[in-house]
Image (cartoon, rainbow, N blue to C red; front, side, top):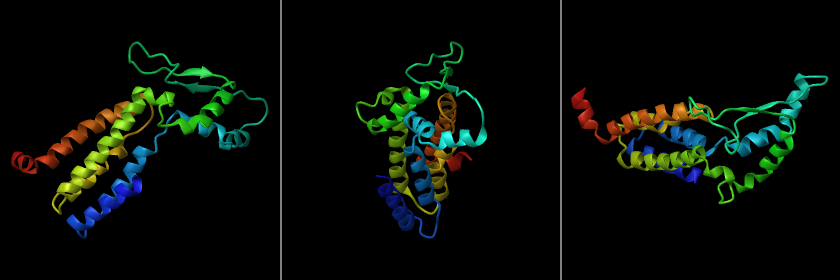
Amino acid sequence: RYRKLVERVEQAEKKSAAGMQGMALAAARYYYKLLAIKDEYEVARFYTDGSFARQLAETFSGDYQLRFHLAPPLLARRDKQTGELQKREFGAWMMPVLKVTAAMRGLRGTPLDIFAYTAERKEERRLIKEYQQLVDEVMKDLNHDNHPLAVELLSLPEQIRGYGHVKEASLHEVRARWQQLIETWRFPAEKSVAA
């Protein structure tokens, strides 16, 4: 589905904004960013694929203890003031748990994916669908005049940063900007008259 979307954008850009560039690249870069979700399975893979252990061995020597500061969505408590998930400290006993979690990544996106039911994962899936709809809308009305705005719209995911509550805050800002830009896209004459 990734390749298909990017190819459609590339064709639309060549047809409706001949000689202009940036839209297909933006779609390729930021659709990928939305699809490449850093979820619990990915975090578990990072810690258990051997590279983390190699980095530890290269950096530290002697007797050291592993401590993980995590906010697992199914175990973490929320801060009463901020509503954010609170990180907890876990010892080295988490490594086997992380190995099992990494091995379960094949469940991602299936009804058996226990993490898929969290608000964050639901939001990520919703954002992918919204981006696909945005791409369709932009391609439908693309021309030379609105091409720069199309590139800006399709580049909005660049501003989504972090994980957990940090990502949630940046997504809130991106959604506000998305709304402004889509209004300008849909009603260009009204915006130029107001300016």
